[in-house]
Image (cartoon, rainbow, N blue to C red; front, side, top):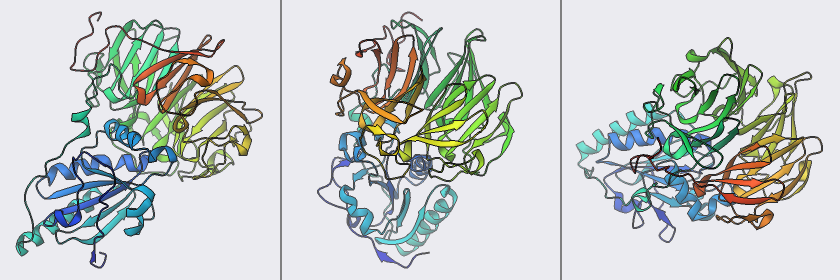
Length: 505
């Protein structure tokens, strides 16, 4: 327990979300307050959101949670981008933009995420960093309520909030699509914000909508199955099987197109806290935010963003294991077991090597799958704060939180997400060049650098077309690789869940 320190006041002139007016610590006297210092790129920050939601609902009449968004990346300092993150992750508590780390410094915070607990008399009485503190926080809040009820210093009443999602409902046909996969069977879209998958033809005809559109972990037919913010996918053409990284369910799912059923093949629905390399039967092994998939032969390789590792699943035996990475968040080139990654969020392969969009170090990594099995950095600084927007060679390249990657014809296409650009990287030389996007966020079709995207996160190539999951534009873009002309796909009859039923299903 920390000594009692008077809580520094929150800034008056900073932007606020989920409330129509600034909140002040002194006005919250009589309530327990938790300040959540976060930044929206950070997987650990995302992991504690369910814990905060649980506590907010349990103690809604006397607990106030306030998110303090202290940005790591330059792109995260933009207020509109923070608003989009609040919508994407369904955050329902007030959030203040901590410009220049003022609040962070006043509370002597050192890491994301950090929670500061303030008692009903406006004193900071405890703080915790990292994940996995739900039980301890629950017990602490209960004791505080009991203590201040006896003292007569608690205020039981609900705060009235003005939620962003009520002002800007997600009624677009797609919502924050995270990944896209072009296959001979059609186009698969991870409609992440709607917790479902969409399968279409390449001209936009809807073939299947897979999932109810409500967050859950339910196996069954296409109309009854449920996902939670699905991301990366891989396709088995011969057997017409789609594998899915069901990210917020911490699970891997198998979608059988012939039988039209969804089955869980790995994960239990719980988040793993074990970052040490290990293995086990798929359905008995707890996973940690699988973000993207690549199938090589009968092995499914997984970018396990939550534990900063690369995993592999033998699709014949059902055994899943850590393939590369020690579980620490860093950029270490070494053997598989001595290497380290930082929130790997994209994965692709040429059959001999895996290529990783290693988002928190804004670098492209190579991972051997034939001897010698080594991990290397293709381009980028390899530093957690070594980001920017610089084309060039190898370690001189600067990316900003890259999330998508696709191998094609000896090159890597990279979604340089926070720079709103698509870049081309040579895996042999480390050369990186901007091909699409002028760096400004927006939705603009056109040619080459006269195009605009808004945090593109997923890429897939079929023939001479590059498909882009343009996440914050709620769109799928198609680029003709002969002319570099970008167009926005239209999906006839596709609607947001609960808005309408597609007429052609």
